[in-house]
Image 1 (cartoon, rainbow, N blue to C red):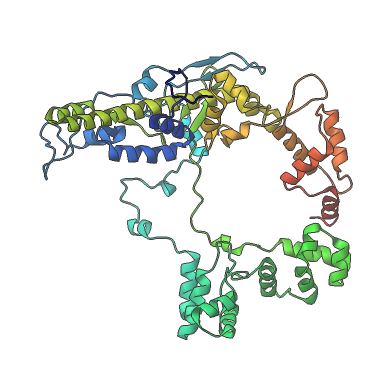
Image 2 (spheres, rainbow, N blue to C red):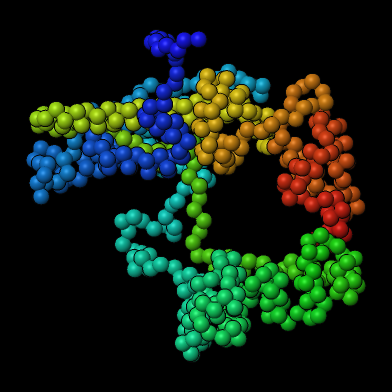
Length: 524
């Protein structure tokens, strides 16, 4: 065989992931809040991009005069550029060309109307209107407390500027008064710094003593005094010690209770017979002791948390439509809105003299144009996917979890003519505010369980909800075993195996029938 060289011409097709395509795919996965940060970074790097609300602020500011402003002047105000309004995050397209999804009636007979008309129109977000303020209030919108006015002069502004006192601040002040020597104060501050939000200390006396170079006995003495300073249970090293400190403060830490705390694993299993043997008491005493344990606080530090939890910001708002069905829109409070400033581009382009400068300006303008189009496409894709999910799960919004239907990414992808991976990216980390509360879009995707009849499949989430309902309805004399739950579900048309019931029960944190029977027998 002779080895020779030759040239062949072949034609092939392949998908090239350009940087812009990669960025567009990444935008689909971002939440509105994350997208806002991304857009801010793009605006900072691109002179031809600006936020629409920044332009409106500039127009309302009487100090800004676009006719007299000059770039580069030390005293010149920022010019109020009058760009041609190119798609604010899709802008004119989003406002003028409404994305109307006129879905037909589903099996519940309810028409669904998914409208994109007012995605960018937030002029009616004040009081009154179509009731969207009430929905946002339920979704966790932050409003001024106590009737405070933004321009009010009746409030105590100095009090508003003062930071709330934390648990650590309070303990440090008490430690400064309670400990006299430098070593004790340093040891107390080290324990306070090691305090977890739940109230447990994450370092032992030996570790603190070794780090500070003091005697372990001194560190143990300081810890004991700290445990007696504030709320009983703080500075405990484990759950048993936390409960013991609280019982000691109530003068209820007798030998039987100590034995109970030494066997918390038996308490978790509700093994009354074993507890009776370990504590050397009768059944009635064990029941009373368990009731006392239940009245204690296993995480005493959480009582001192000053900062309220930050509510989740929904990416999609859902509300009843005027003619029936549902209406969806992207949350305008978190969605970034950008404009392309073509007038500024023309001004700068006219002053560019070198080819490199003109090429740089053209690249920045192309980047700005691509970003606006990508944002518009992202908004349309999210609403298209969310609309299909709402259409298929319409019964859930009317009847609750029991009416949730099986749904997969492929089913939605085939309906909206998108790839399955695109639907997965769109639904990742997206929250929708519905009349039933806030839900991740992923929540509506559940596997199917077959029916014993031919009427269709059941959603796994609906089956889990049914199992939880059956368990909550139990009484002490009729605790259902997994086999009995299987029989009930089979009679209701749900084809399910015993191991599946056990798996769902354990995933929901429901104890076994033996443990539930023991707990109900002692009133737990």
